[in-house]
Amino acid sequence: MSELWKVKRFDQLSGKEVYEIMRARVDVFVVEQECPYHEVDPYDLFSLHVYTTDVDGSIIAYARIFEMDDGISFGRVLVREDCRGKGLAQLLVAKVLRVIKKRFAGMPVAIEAQEYVQSLYIPFGFEPASEIFMLDGIPHVRMEKR
Image (cartoon, rainbow, N blue to C red; front, side, top):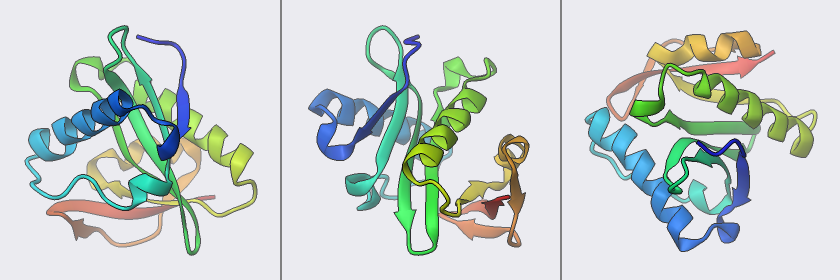
């Protein structure tokens, strides 16, 4: 595993990096979660992409940060299946929040977390701010950072 977290705008990503990001997202959100929806969307073009790779350049942890009308959000948080259980998700969220603090200081932060992983975000100061709702067939909850 690369120890370096990379933070890039879409126009800074190489073709291989875009491919690896999309492959990782499809593997987790479409194949693993059996959720056949369009994984690529316009947010990709103006997001900050935060990720780390293994020695071969394959994405092992990833998230994207983007501006919304009411503040900052991040999503598509993933850790590759064979790399889970090692604390990478916590390291990724911590890195994402450091980037947000540096680049978007003072702006409110809210996310739409999958219900089953909302406990990942609570130690970082997030609280549920909605009832459970369905998004692409998966239960989600809006969470806001205190």
